[in-house]
Length: 98
Ligand SMILES: [Zn+2]
Image (cartoon, rainbow, N blue to C red; front, top):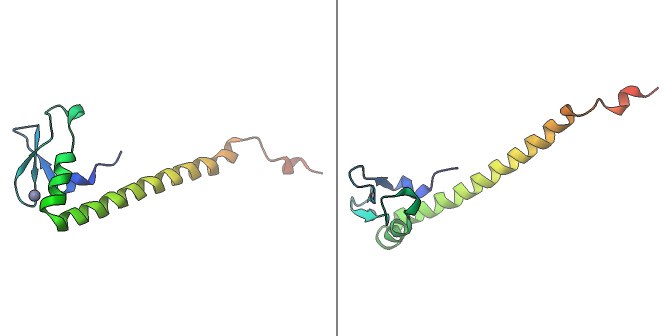
């Protein structure tokens, strides 16, 4: 899975796993928990939306691109499966004509 593009704009704080630092303004924002499963980036997103408009625009762009990348990758994967299938099958019937 590709990383959330929000992490292009925040860094995790080693001393306090429940917080992340905004690389634009240097302030710390809560992830809601120090346990990865319970963490949320909602606070980070709303900080970008409210405080760093230019950065937020860049984040939105990257998030949209990443969704597109994911979709393209999935498509390529489906195609490669379809292309390799005939090789695994029986010899073509054409070989037995005549
Ligand atoms: Zn900030």
